[in-house]
Length: 196
Image (cartoon, rainbow, N blue to C red; front, side, top):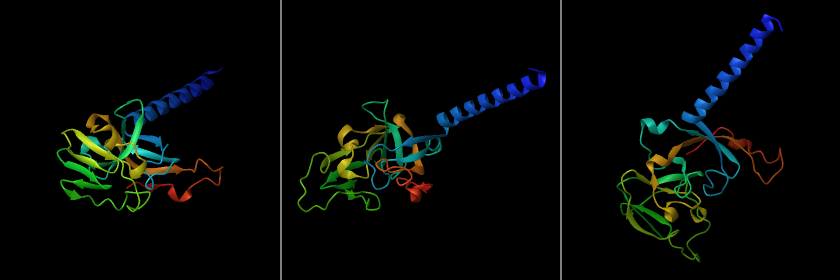
């Protein structure tokens, strides 16, 4: 190898190393990709959606009600969960006949909450459909899935610690129905969709 080839090889190696370091820094501190494995956030997020999560946003502001957050599952921190923030620190929260009450006022969650059926003929389950009133401690949040009858959330495992929050989901960058073969399974209308 002559000097020109050696310097060109070295430039490529340095560029690859820098790109890997840059990607690692972005993934660790700025934005991270996640795949939705379950239907607990239907209809907002579907199984097979791949999302981007902003890991910086909560360094500059506190989480707000309605934010969809990725966090470390309190009962197994090696697993990532995604749910919607429903209750904030200091608030009283209660669920009565599937209706969420914040400080004794019904929460208007009609834009995102999904129920499998109406109240007629359903059999209430505790704590899913009736959750006794509690005050959310400081530094904690009450999280719920949008698919209310099919979500393992704060009604089952308790409050979420602020320290367990990874970030806020903000967009779907890829989506595929995992039960259909490519290219039929592609959900083109979901690509680039903002998450609310």
